[in-house]
Length: 195
Ligand SMILES: [Zn+2]
Image 1 (tube, rainbow, N blue to C red):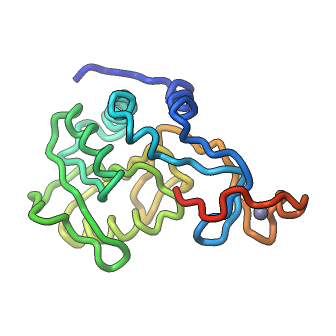
Image 2 (spheres, rainbow, N blue to C red):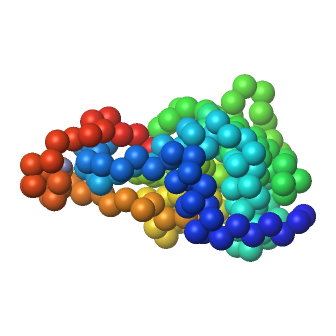
């Protein structure tokens, strides 16, 4: 594998140029507030740039866990990104679907059980979906699952699965009662932000 190393700054510039950063008073679906949110769609719509970011993710995965036995990603955006990463690493790939207690493999994906798995997401916000996926994958029989995301609001680990991200969100989160933008009377620019 070619060791493509994209610096964090370069990836942030990609996000910036693609229009992924929505700056302004934001209200998220779980009622947290923030000074902006990250919209991954513009990057998804540019596969050439997405390939560069996937190459950087492949490098991060190798550095953290070596070559994984498989990459598993959730439908839809996560799996688009995950497929690019799996192609670069030349490893098998599978897609999950569903949320909470209903996560399963998409259609006829029935990967062989293996060790050293990379669960690859696009953006992790609350970690709820990642947690549900990890529970499903463990129940299915996979061992040693490490979580990788383009960007994560969750630092450290999710249910004992280490979480590694390419970049850190440039935005802050506040509880709705603690929001400095609300306190200064600024109107909400993005009332239904979702990363
Ligand atoms: Zn606010």
